Length: 364
Image (cartoon, rainbow, N blue to C red; front, top):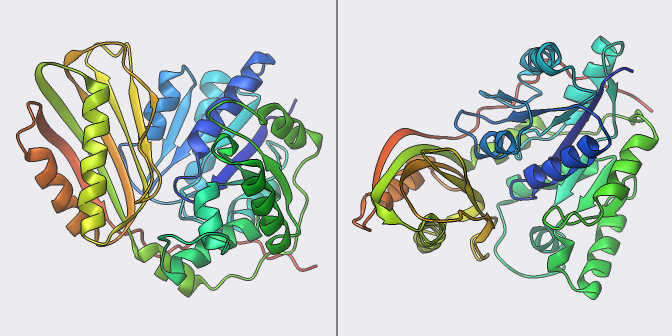
């Protein structure tokens, strides 16, 4: 059978990687071979470390989104095919990108239609962030240019997945579903919890029912899109952490709480802060997430015991000056906490102007 290409987008912090992991495990239980493709503006990805830890073959595309690295995307699929012969490619684009139907799905179908069947495009949302942007609840949000990207992501979705439903009351979920349905009437709406696995099978059944349909290409102001991306600071950090035997779970949570306080004090809104901490023996992994400045730290995977040395990977996306954020982060990690942090890799930048390799304009 022709392999399927299945892309899952959504804004930073929507829970894409956890959802993809659940989806990959679902298909693996059905006997299908799965290859995953992660994507970021730079190297040192928490997502790649997490997916690899669960035993899935992963190719990492860096230096730009799928739309601007289209040829690298097809090369990554070819590498996975050569090594593992997947029945299904699960791809996660950069969380600040949009226009992916016109710049990825449609060109992939046009140029490589004999090689891939393209599944409907899913965009996931974090409910609390969506409630604020859709006007259901008050709270810290983003600049209008960043909100423009967020809404355009939902406008092009074949399927909008309201994620993290385990955090919602029935009333909040109903109100959110109605707001999403009213704002984006062309999309199918599903609900799921990537954390618990609720709704994953129903989502997969919808994806399996038919290939992606062809809609008219949405209107998009690339100037506003570029301005929105340029407001975001991107920080990727890899470091060695050492000390007398310490609790890595407590260390991660404490570090996240301090980063949260420092950025709030500086007026910088977190889009997504995520990190992994892996002891040198590689047998275990701690994973922490924070998806907004006033949110709570989630430790989605805990270490079983203490250790003395390991690798810390931090990916931080926030609306603010990346050099300022990096300086704050470096100062914080250098404080005497009983754990020594030796930074090996630190990048701080703003995403460049989106310049897609292809853009298929469909008129209907």
